[in-house]
Picture 1 (cartoon, rainbow, N blue to C red):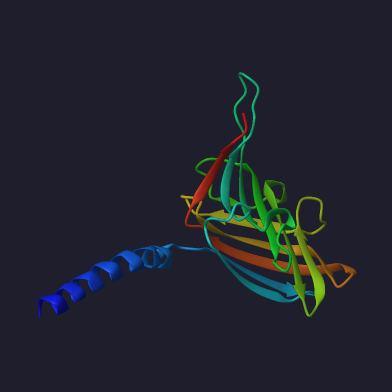
Picture 2: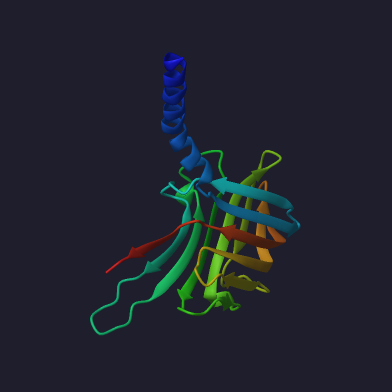
Length: 184
């Protein structure tokens, strides 16, 4: 009887030790990005990534400023920055300049975003940045900068080598962690 009780206790202790990392990993929140593209190019993406990737996440960047000048800030959301991982979408969004306390940006000079993907074995590029005629952008950031939405109408689209296509894109994201980078 004692032997059986001792084995049960050891089993419970071992299960709690072995199960603890699994439990912690299961509760860690991933970064989530939803992308919807309409117009001449149609595409839906649901991206989910662990928070420990070095090329994926939400980041507030403080840029270098010479002495006596104020620092400028930009806010970025990236997936697979610089396309380091093959067979994975690349996406980046930048709100620049970012202003503390401001959560809505509607000027085409306020930022940009771009998606590189594949659909039906063809390359897809959707671009939304200043200089595209007829482009309208809207960025809405959560006060804690860990989530937000972006929308572009009149964006440029390329699909399988066809250029000059028109697209609209909406993006929603949430990041469990906000990274801070300082340059200078």
